[in-house]
Length: 389
Image (spheres, rainbow, N blue to C red):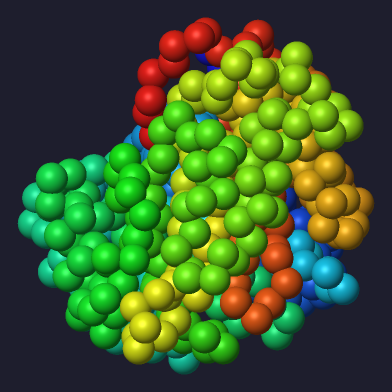
């Protein structure tokens, strides 16, 4: 059950997908310390990359359902926190959304990414090398291509693309990931991945990254905290204890402020079933050892709380544990919506903890646009929930 979108800082009246999300992005740029010139440029980039969907009125239903967000807005924001710096703002979007079917969506997305990359001087050769694997004539699965922009001062973002391992069928997803890793020089990487329920995404950094990554995202259903802590395959026990502690707080299995055991069914007796799986991501930057240099755990916090007030409390607790300032997160939520956190659930979609060799841990909060709908607060999920997403 969902409610029509209300409580926007923009006031009443007919709005569009691009108009709403661009204004949210402008305000988020201010939270992240980007100047007005960069903010204006990035807002235009967002609407340009959305294409025709940007002009679609929000009083019409989504032209195409998208797996990117719960309410089918083809945009999601995130803030990445590290010690001693302002949070980094990112925007994830589906550039081919609305093109009509996965095949057309994939072609439109590729065209959009290549055009934008050309303007920024970003090479797409690594993406081009994988086109036949991830863009078959009759693709399957929940997505064709997503693009993430890490918004930096100067108006030129860092670019990431997310591809669908199940494009040629779920049974071939593992083979697709293995072959993609091989083509990019990571011949031993597939064997380093932990067991999982599903291959979710294959991601690439494009262009000017200090260490361009190839990333594999996996789904893990009914995960315990101990299992979460043991997922990393970096070869040096990178952050295992921190990852387990992070999971306990994010999933409501800890006594952190606002995160009591009573908040989550099954927190004492075992893991609470969730609609969406916990996700792991292994990042590969070198080809000699076959081992990943980075590991990230993503907890779908919206499936572990009754409302966003609880999700915010858990996010604040996690940031505090890392010595990170939570004030920008609260400002970010106010930049996206004027509704109270207690009046809905899903505004904070995921909480993530990343460990990259040689760098401090990073906490990322994923923020939904809610351009179409707000999911109302509800009681706890039943003891048995469908695994979807």
